[in-house]
Length: 389
Image (cartoon, rainbow, N blue to C red; front, side):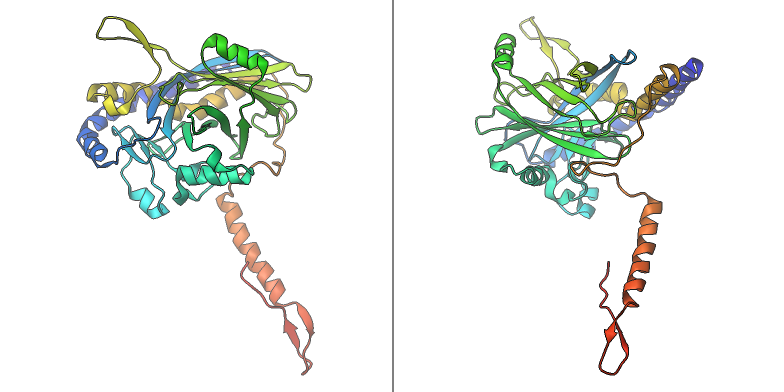
């Protein structure tokens, strides 16, 4: 099994290397078009800005068997309300009908509201869909006039997004809530609205570190991994990536702890930006945690894409690889997928189910239209009125 996994990694590496050169050539050819796109886009004057966040993700399982891994991971941050293309690298679809959104110019990393929160309704845009979700949670959207969205954006039309973050800010541009959008490999989705609750403990920790530490805990009610039951609870520890006052540009630092029913730590997952050193004109060294596409040169964009384009495609194969290790080598118990709870969003129907739904609908129409209701005055049977199902 170990030999198979090694060859699996080598196969992925070889396949990725074969197209790396094509990516470099393509970005050079489209750079002039990207500059035109950027010129056509309306400038964003609100707080926050589109940014690339090269990250590291770690995953440590503590019980019943120990297992851990570390991988590179790329997320994109955009202010909710902005649409257009930034530097040819990041784009957000406008709040327009589906046909129009498909025709708009896109950056390398593209975000469409249709893919987030409640499925569909992309014409509402990120802002409209966020407002709709908050209202469904009986929360007035006016509480959070500013929001920043962090996600693994689509690259060449593909993405696999285990988790996305909606950072919500008040009128003073202070982080007050986070919405976690969690997806599992079955196509199900669960959103968690987590308001900031300042306690003496996290208040002291925040003051020591000089930045807000967002802490919140909630019951586990969503089936994410087949190696974990739906019991227990989660704990989130996160910073404000735009501190201070939505003027910052990272870092991102998120830790999610899965606890057992006995409150013991079972699994710890982290996402944090890579720290890079940059020398200023004065000769001093400063740390940077993100990249601004609006000021990146052609060479910087080419180098970035050559180094990071494959990461999104590798996310799902990596999950499959480590699932194989946990099942075959660690021999962990497998929990079969339970039916999603009312708070969760079920998976989309596949092609077979869609076809069966159509046939079943026609069958129901046939039954209803042939049910004997009662005899009319002439003694003949009258079918029930039938409406399209």
